[in-house]
Image 1 (spheres, rainbow, N blue to C red):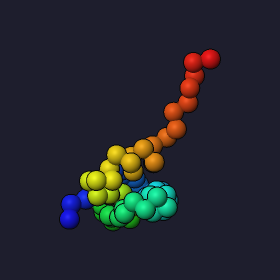
Image 2: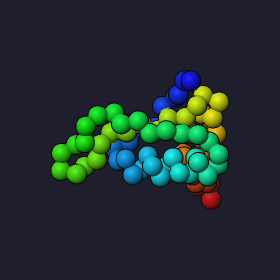
Image 3: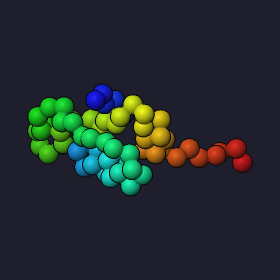
Image 4: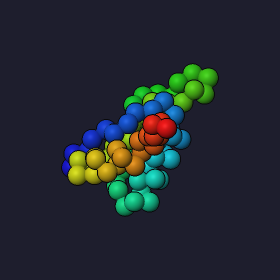
Length: 71
């Protein structure tokens, strides 16, 4: 089974939050640790991965909301 990295972050809690959001929409996701924990509690690099067939929907779900500034 092939997984695609959707996002990398230096905070595991952020990846876990995105994973929970995707799970709420029945999109399978996994978190992969990319290295050792960094110094002084700054976090450890992690990657959020999804299956290829869910990549587009998952990207839309975790992307920031675009604001309409055409007033």
